[in-house]
Amino acid sequence: MHLLNKTNFYKIIVLVFCVSSLLHTKNPIVPLKILKIKESNNVYFYATNEQKNNIGLYKIDINNTWEHLWEYNFDSNKSINYIDCQIGDITGDGRQNLIIVLYSYEEKQQIYLFNLDQNIPAPSPEIYSITSLHNSSEPIQTQLISSDKDKDLEIIISFTSPERKILV
Image (cartoon, rainbow, N blue to C red; front, side):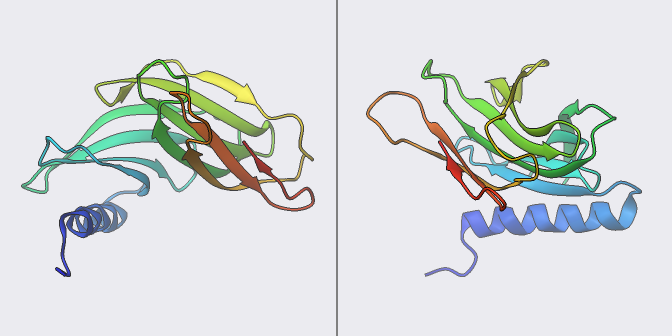
């Protein structure tokens, strides 16, 4: 088994990129999700900043040059404590979606849903609030699964105490 397979190689490239951005910029980025695109020698990934007040799509090519392709800024009045993202078809229409789950002290638990067009998110998301939880229950992990035989994926979110739950 090769120690440096293609997936590990991409992870190393993203790690080197993030470390170099930390050393060279005032506002370093924190990777959230690496995209797996088979037809490309480029690495695409979603990242946020230390303040977690935005999310961006980045591309690193084979020469280790990078390009910032897209960005969405969350409300500047939010103090975001948690952010995670997943990619999959949750509507069943055959198109991929970018699903962002976040927790802010002001708005509590929210889901931002972007439609993707060639891996680039639409400019305006659909925003959903999760209101059935205790206000201090924060999300700690998100996943997408296929739990039934239909075309779409379901979002699973696990939450911390005082109301520990897993929502589908």
